[in-house]
Length: 623
Image (cartoon, one colour):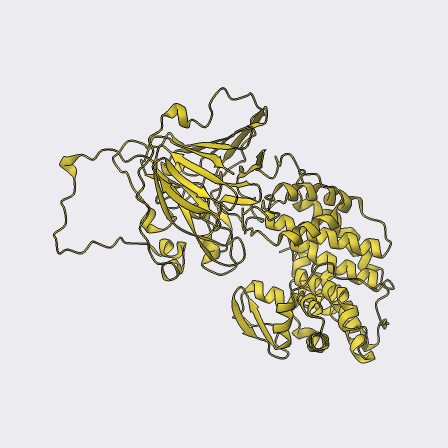
């Protein structure tokens, strides 16, 4: 065990000495008045005034002096102890909100040092910056005793960040910890050790997580957004204090802003990959404007592994790389080669999103929750019990453009070691943005399984089966979806907006091969009940609560449109030459069997030849 980790407890105990004990001078007020940059939610503030909280749809009561409970989920504990809800009380603006804010902060600062939850420096950093950002709202008019206790707590907890960093926080959370340290450094300049420590750590923290193209090492648009938000706050604090801006910080801001803009749809929200939700488009825009004046959109994200195809009003964002490396893979989803498609400000094809609720959080990481091919009884990577991943696949991609049209060729070998073959997806976006075509195939499969390709639809999209395919209607446009495979319309769920919303999905499978009549199963007796399909616990957890929340409905029985291979080929004409992207390295441990998706959607073709490629096309037919 490293010496620094071994000495963490005594260092933390030493750091949390109360400066009111006489060994240091405690200022009466901050030397620099900071302002919280982000808007609050008055509805949340009103509930807090009444000692109520509602987080992820779960209501809880605030109890005086209780800031931690083992029964609380980690995201709620982070929110409560981080004091970001002070901006909600400030947004409410009533005198009752000011009194409630002051009362809750007083409860915390009166806690003995040994009883404070300070082991996570990122939560501590959020708390310190929230106190200082809302200081004018709840503390400036308070009595001298309250303000002295508050300033003492700022010093104590800032020293706890020094004692714990850099080992105790990673990713954007490390930036949050350093932001709190910086806020205290400029507010209490008589203690230069705070600023010295910040400047010593910031370069390493930024370099370890921000990729050369400006993306985040976790490959999550959500984490990139939170990173940009932290960078924006640090730039603001340094500018208010009139301190020199670290070169690494400015460079990171200039690289991450274009990357974040590239991972948004035209509605302003984030694309849904690797644990992301849409986020409030106005907040995303506000954060981007704070971090950089430039409105440049990154043309490509080669290190982040996302492909962006834009033509006319149409936009395709595809996940074209392997999962994040070990240590940064807690948000990694098995969505390799999945994509999202939007036209104008309307999303059509989406991934299901993410959730912080146990059960849903795990289920949404599997291929069944993404617009991608799923192979029955197999998983392209393994999710460990601690949330990390193993057995990552190799992913390759080639993106070429010509006269405004885009060709994207992607593969991953996540199913290959299990006999499923190499998954190959090709996409073509026409130069006018009115046509999107694709081909899905498995190459070199030794164990024939029925693949299904899922296209999850945004909740705003209505589906109309027709004799020529399926019409996808939005408020402004209609798109015709066609395929030479079998197409079913089934229920799905969308969690991109912070809550579960019922929606639909198109499920494609290859045309069923003719059955051998000699091997056909005998028909059941007239009075016999159909046998229930056995499901494993993993399958039952794949889509928790869906059966209770969504009544089963019959899939559409629209006839499948028969289209020739020439008509449906996603790569009509020669593919322009392009430099291939090197595949990400992969380990090759013994694969673990896994199941994905809802059991009613799993199919097997043992003993049958490998399925033929599936071709599909989306065509704009009316505006």
